[in-house]
Each structure stands twice: as C-alpha cells, then as structure tokens.
Image (spheres, helix red, strand yellow):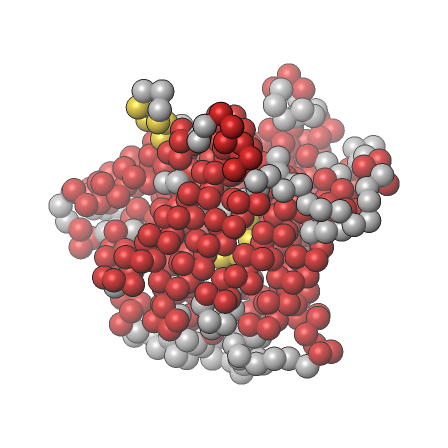
Length: 439
C-alpha cells in the first residue's frame, strides 16, 4: 500500500511546506501559481456575468483565509468553482445577482456543517456516502451539462439569441481550441501549466485581426478602482430569496467530493497526509469560509484548484509562502481597473473555444474517477446508479415542489445518486475511498 509520507514521484523537494524561498525566487515562483489559476478563475465570472476583479479579490482573500484555518499546513490555492456556473446563472434568472450570491453563501455553510460532523464523528462516513460510483457521474454531469454554454459562446455573436450564428465567431473559437489542444500536448517544462492562458492570448490576437476586439472600455478605465462588489444583503428589501437555495446549496455535495479528491492527491504529491494533519475538518471549514466570503462580496464560490497542485508536482515547490504570494498578487490585481477592463474585452468566441476544452476535461475527469475508483460497470447496481445520474443531470430534469422550491438537475442527480447508493444492495461493489486513511 502506498505510504503518503513519501512523495508520489520520489524526487527531491525544492522547498517544503514551511520553507520560505529567497526573495529573488519568491516572486517568480508565486507568478507560476498565478498563471496556473488565472485563466479558470476569471473564466467563471465571465461566463456568469460577474466582475472578474471580484473573483480575483475573493480568490486571493479566500486562499489566505484558508491558510489561516489550516494553520499554514496545506499549500492549496482556491479559485472560482466551475460546478456553480449553471446554478449561478439559474439563480440570477430567478432572484437576481444578490439572490444567487445568497445561495452561494449558504452553500458555504454546508461545508461548515460537514466539517463539524467530521470533527465529532470522523471522516469515514462521508467518504462512504460519496463513493466513486456517485462522484464520477456527477462530475461528468457538470462538464456535459455546460456543453451548450460553450457551444453558444463559440458560435453565436449574441450568446442568448440562436439566430445570431456567426461563422467568423466559430472560426475564432476553433482556432482558440486548436491552440489549447496543441499547447497542452506539445509544451514542456514551465509552459505546461499555462496552455489555457496561452490559448486565450493567441485567440485574442486572432480575434483582433477580424475586428472582434473592442478596447474602448480599456482606454476609458481608471487605473485604480474598486471591484464591482455585490453584497447580497442589499437585495433583501423584497424578502429573503429562499427559492435559490435548492439551486445552489446541493451543489456543495459535488464540490465537497472534489475537495476530498484534491486533498488526497495533494497529500500524495507533498508526502504528508493532510486528511489527518491538520485534518479534513479544517480544510473543509477553510474552503467553506472562503465560499461564504466569496458569496458575501458577490464573487463565484471557491474551490481548491488541481491546476496549482499540478504546478507543485512539476516544480517540487510546496512552500505555503509561494502559494500565499500568488494569493496576494491576485488580491492586488483586483484593484487595477484597466486589468479588469482588459479581461472584459476578451471576445466571447475566444472564451467559447477554451470552454469547449475545459468543460470536456471536467467530464473526462468524471470518467477517470470511475476508473481510479475501480467501479465495476459490469455490476447491474453500479451501471444503474451511473446511468440514472447521467440522464437526470444531462437531461435537465428538475424537481419543483410548488412555488417555493426548485431543485436543479445537477443537485437532483447528486441527491438521487446518494439515495440509490444507500438503498440498493451490494454496496461493497461501489468503491470506497476510505482506504486513504489507512495509508
């Protein structure tokens, strides 16, 4: 059995978690992490209609808060969560931006409740509640459920109007997608962490050649400005928007499962079992507080980023100071108005091109979860659980309980999977992630 006290690769460690690098190395090492998280972190607010500067702010502050809660023992970066894209869009349509942010804030409370239960009763119950046979297809639903969003951005000059199909836009999207695929496969070394960011740069230049870039907002932007914060409490004049809670709160089930997976991978990369020290209850509590903070300020919910874990695996730099430095840089960039305006000038087909790749990768990671969890789809029980989750989630099924409650398809798929796993016989064939605690 693998010993998590040994690093996954067995290579020499450049800087351990508590090490502070020399000043001359600190900035470039932190910039690597900034580059790794930047593309995905600003893509989520662009897709959901939120100010990217707010996402940078809440990402930076959320990461620093997470580090405080975990006593500086886990070098994890928190960025915008893709799992909340569709629920935020639906929440905005139902109750406006403030209503969607209220739902995101409450989703963070779920983390705190689960963290408290883990503190009292241990963690094995949660790992058995969310086995690979449930988590895998739910992750696939996240990616495949967003497929139409990516295609609309890539092909429509006005993403909300199907009649505005544009061959030029689709050409730009395909070029951007080709760049992302090529960079991801061809690039080596430092540049392997930046294929999406580099693809956006190339797509931006290509779109500019066809006159699709409008820099007027950049020229008129102030050098320093406050991000466009949306405090959801200001939207309570018409009452508390309880109806958004079924849309966003159950998504926490999915992101908690992702959090556990990231902690297991990070433990193996660094060589320290973070599920035991400082404990999964602390890391979940920190993630939950960061998500609540993001919702309070009007930013997308946060989640631990696999991209930054990849940076650590490549560089063997695990320093909490380096990851914290990236958080501080992101926080500072949020107050530069021209930076936010420039991000906002990225044409929608460029975003659509990278979204096709990213959303597909999310779906594929769900397949990987099933494979690595050794889920036997030859067993009728497992096959039925996976199939039902996929059809409910991708098919867009929703559960409406009168005018008060509407449970989104993604949340309904996750809840259905948990119920089926608990009710159907033969649980031992579903895969159990609890073995990590014995390593």
